[in-house]
Image 1: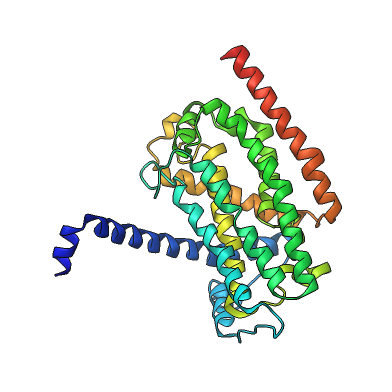
Image 2 (image 1 turned 180 degrees about the horizontal axis):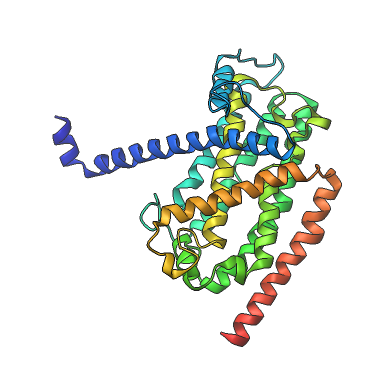
Length: 334
């Protein structure tokens, strides 16, 4: 009966295939989150002349993150009495769902991509901004002044840094004439955009750190001021959802930088083309991920007013100047 249903309804069969592929991608991302957190803790430990996790799972602490996740799942789920219960419960879901949705358009190789749409870059930027709604909702629904301040900071930070983030890639769009991420990768077969658009890369990298709420731009969850900020009232698996969203975005943003600035799956030199594209993507991914971790260890947290001034007074003018310069060069020489 099931075979007849699948044969008479190819749409359902396709849905099952994509559903299974989505589950596989989710498992891959969860694996990255598990060992990405471990890698971050180990790298930070070595940079600070300490060992990092070294108890659970042998001397390398390979099961430390797994133990932490199990602890979170077993912790009591506490909802404050005066919280807005429906919104309090819904906020972590609103924060996490867009982080997984953006993975659909990322081309990991020339053959592995879930949705090759013509406006993949625009889709990523538009959908990723929805997570801020979950952060603001969680901060407001907690009925906690520190959580509310954290939520407001997240909204202000997103508005301030989303603009230079978008403006920085306009130069690449001018060169390629496309918002399709596959087209952007193929245009880099003769030169990566990190070399052709170095100003755009620097602006995008700084703005992406702010978009990820990572040090030195982690004002929405500033422990020294807001005792964890927007998720201060969350515990157990609901808190884990916020952290999961943060690290899934780290996976997605790292992949996006590799795609639009480092040539995606393309090798640095043509004679190295015999090495599979997935290997090149993974190597570039690891380098960019290390840079994000390095930033967290190396830089102190910015003050809130300095954070806003940097976005509006530095990054935005620089990104606009890069658009003008790119358009001028393209008009005069191409």
